[in-house]
Image (cartoon, rainbow, N blue to C red; front, side, top):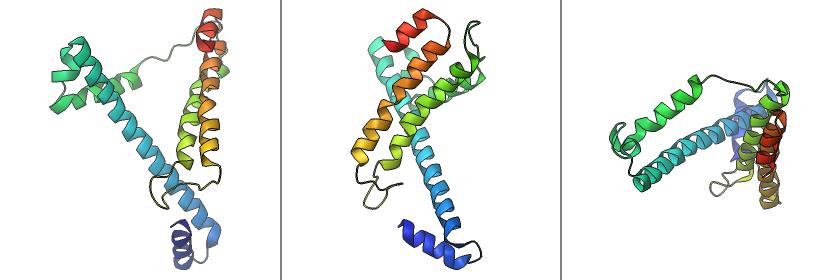
Length: 161
């Protein structure tokens, strides 16, 4: 599918050539993967809130927030975006801000080798399972780096734990 798309794009725009088709295919793949990750995250947060709300007998996630409680997840997302970003006083600001990006990259890059169907994969690899395991295991570096970057030994112990 990738080769077909790139060839068709090269025929329609011959002045840009094959490399432009590769770049457009890569950007399209990233956009689709990012959309899938965002939608699945929203769904799983909603599902977790429904289950925990049912177990704890809380009204919010089970009965409030529109049909089936979808607006609770949207309200959580808006609240998360509007929260004040606070950094501890003794923290290393660069490392403390870098840690979430490392954790996100570890979970996002794993989707590159995950096949969604026959021929529907962002990057075909012979060692895709090992690649996914290696990339997903790098998420822990973000957690440890956040604990280390906070400047507190207790946060570091919590990150290592």
